[in-house]
Image (cartoon, rainbow, N blue to C red; front, side):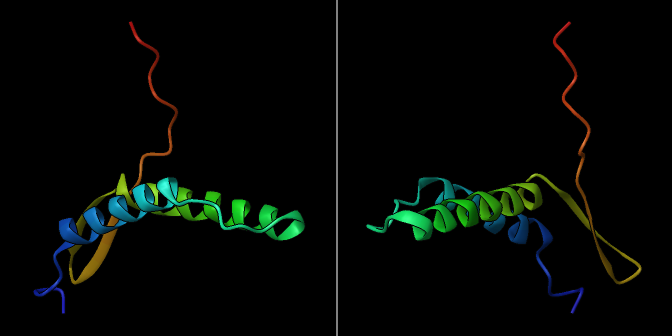
Length: 76
């Protein structure tokens, strides 16, 4: 399977999903359901964006995703 996996393609699909979640319109619901929808959309975006920012490789048959969680360096 590792020979068939397009790691960069997979990461790009996660970038696309993050963009789709960010641009998703809110359904016509109110109250607690609306808040649940918003919270789920925020979680979905975070998950997809993190994987979309990853660098990926297959090492010894294992898919390795590296995600830098350090805060950005302040401008010099």
